[in-house]
Image 1 (cartoon, rainbow, N blue to C red):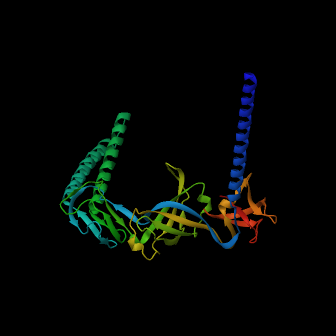
Image 2: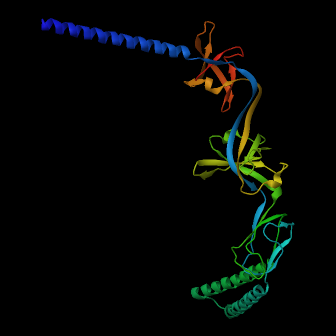
Image 3: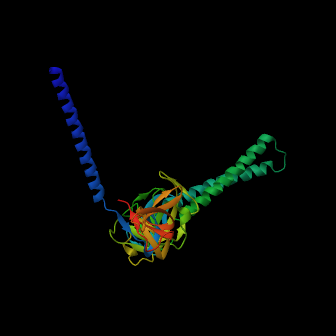
Length: 342
């Protein structure tokens, strides 16, 4: 009797478990179907509009005409005509150094030259009419070289004396001066820096993978960090033939003139920014959001809505593209509805 009762209880448990599983499966099916019903597909049609393929590079403001001016030798400054930031005229004397010490040094070199010359002429008189052995010939050659070196010393000192005035080779702005007053001793390494502000350019750096896309005359827009929200229209003026190595790899310099920009006077050397170069442009191109396309085996595909409200995969050909759009050359028309992935 007890055995039959136990069997009956077990049978009822299995029935309840089966019913529970069935209910859960039904709930899951209904939930999934409801979710699928809620998914709404989005379709877009190709649109005709202007599309421009661009390349963005970073760079800084520089000047084509700038110079670091130094005295050949150091000296005490006796004349100073400008301070850092002043406007300089062409051939203006910026600074002069004391000539007195240089003149004394020149006189000393002249005396040493005369002494060497007398020694040389005495040697010539002594050996003019006799044969010289190897040792005497070597000594004579050394004396000749010593005399020539003294001549060079005098010439160099004379050049130094003639260059005690530092003049500007072109008009510009004095952007660096090692001194602020006369009476200061300058070293040979001290320099004045002169920059012509009418030759300002924006110099960008382009990776070797993109340099072949750039040519002179391409329109570009410059954005500088110092002028947020502003753009300055210019064009590619020069692409360097030689490369340079950076931490990011091999790059080439691309130059954009800024002197034609109306607000060029606002620019300063070293300002950072970006240049957006317009590589190519189509005025009335058939375009599509780029995220509606996918690439497989070097071919481009989209999903197009059919007449029975289904989608079919279609191969298309493309050309120019931006971060958001792609130009359609074939495979689609303005009447097509293309699936836009979520």
